[in-house]
Image (cartoon, rainbow, N blue to C red):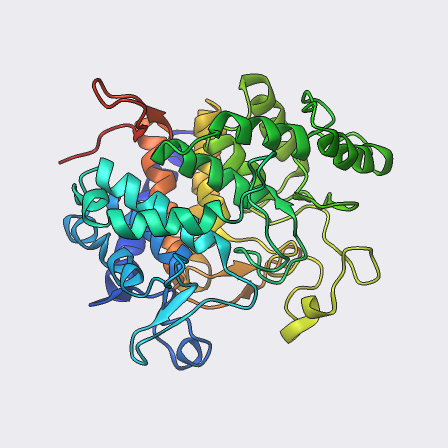
Length: 416
C-alpha cells in the first residue's frame, strides 16, 4: 500500500512538472496557445488565443505555484479584451498573426462568460490585482451583451445550438453548461436576479425534484420533459420549447456542483449519479454517458463533420482531460477526498499517455488518443485539480469580505 502511495505521489509530482513545462512552451507574447505549435495545429487554428481556453488556462496558471505562469496568467485575457466586438461579445479566438478575431457562426456565448470569470478570479487572487478596475468598460460591455440574451422571466441565457464549448452538439434554448456559468458570473459581479436564475436553473434542468416556478411557461416546458423522460438524477443538458437533452452532459453537471447551483442534497445526488455512470472509468471524464446516435431525435447532420462527433467521440462521449480536472474539483467540493485523489492519479495517467502527450481527448470506448497533442487546457485543468486536492478547497467557492457590499470574491485568497 505504501509503495502504491509513493508511486502515485511520484506520478502526480511528475505530471505537475510536465504540465507546467507544457504551458511555458505554449506561452506567447499574446497569451497561451490552445495547443502545441505543430503544422497540423497551425492548419486547424489551434495556435490562436481561444477565449474559453485562455480563461481556463489562466486559472490553472494562477494556481500552479510557478512564478512565471502566475505572472503571465492574464496575458491572453488582455489580448482578448483588445478584440472585443463593439456589441460586447468576446471572441471565440484571436488569430494574432492576422490581427483578426473570430466569433463562430451563431455566437460563441461561453467565451464571454469564461473571460468574465477569469478576470474576477485573477483579480481576487492578485494575479494581478486591479484587473477588474482596468477593464471595467470591457466588463460592462460584455455583461450588456449577455444581458441582452437573458430571458426576462426565467433569468436564464438563451442560445442557438452548437454555440458553446460543445460546438458540434445540438443543445439550444436554455443550456445547462452555459447557465451554470451565467449564475456564477452573476454572483461574481453582483448582477440582479441571481436567486431567480438559480431557482429557474434547478426547476427547468431537474424538474423531477425541484419546485417549479408559478410562471405558466415554466410548467409547460417541464411538462414536456416529465411526459417524455424517465426520472433522472442528473440535470438535463438543455431544455427548449418541446424537446430537451437527456444524454447526461457531464461537464454541465460538474459545473453545477462546482459553481454552487444545487443545494447540499441535490449536490450529493448529482455526484452519486455521476459516479454511477462511471464516466471517470478508466480516466476522468467522458463528456456524455448516453451518446446521441444517428437517427435519434437529437442527431444533426453537422455532427458527422470530419467524422468527429459520432458515439463516444469528441463532444459526444469522448474522454477529455479538461473535464477530468473539473471532475476532481467537484469531488473535492463534495468532500469526496479519497475519490478525488484516485481520479487525480487517473487524470495524470491519461496525460502521460503517448509520452506525456496531454491529448485533447480520447475515444470514449477504445481509449485511442485523439485531437491535438500538447493541449494547454489539459495541462491547466490538471494544475487546477491538483491545487483543489492539496488545499482541500474548491477554488470557485466564494466568500464575502467585510465592507465589500454585495460583491462576491473568490476564496481562498492566494496572494503570494
